[in-house]
Image (cartoon, rainbow, N blue to C red; front, side):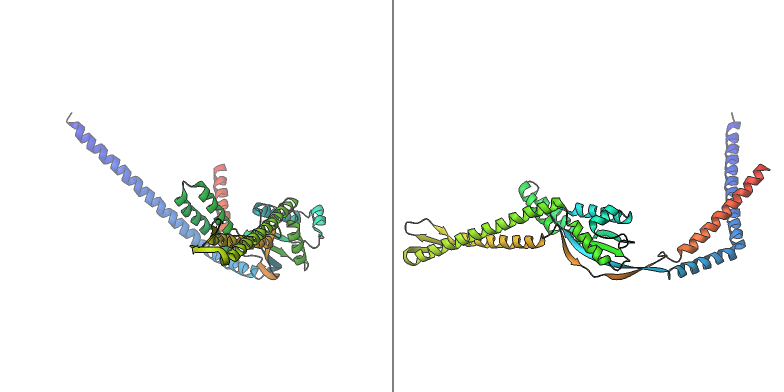
Length: 331
């Protein structure tokens, strides 16, 4: 029994000794590893330096190999909830141009030669994207004040979304000198959608009808005010708070009528503006001028090619090492 503590201490010392030996061997192997890496780099320093210089020179030289295209930017605004249609039809057009779809080209009224290398892309304008995020945040903050008022919240949402409608940039890239004409034909094709043309016709008809009705109401208000004004000169007894109190007549709230007339005039102005803006499904805000763009054959950073060559050299060296080890196993 008295020997047990002695044996226990001896066992602990042996375990600690083995642990320190293992740690020492690990550090020794790590040191050997770093030495081998150093020797490998030292042995291949000239090759690695040559690859870095060669890669840098090739990358620098490739930057002078460029291709030129013409670019035309068109700023548009989709109307009548046609944003999804706009993006879908642009993608469809680009696919048909790249696949040289003859049926589509005939429908568009262009030749295969005119659309060689033709590209069409679309993206939101950056400024409007930022404005849209601000409007969405404004809507969420304001909506918190009307959590229990569905009607007010819906009206507020419609107004904010209407004010945050995005403009979009349609970009045409081409080599053929007639590319600008092709771009015009594409924009006409986009606006030729039957569904949206019918929807636009209904919207236009409703707006014109609304304007005419408002004009009739304004005329009636003017007639009422004029009639009561003439009676006021001879039969009015009192004038208080914007009301004309006439003998044998009901009270007439002049300020209310004038306020209604003002709202009707503002509504007419809004509808006339809509008629102008909604002349097409996709309104063209600015049809830009063609300008030349230059694209480098190798547009990446110069450091990329040296890194690629050095990485390839390391890979080949590693495969060579594996092949050597495999040969030793076979022997």
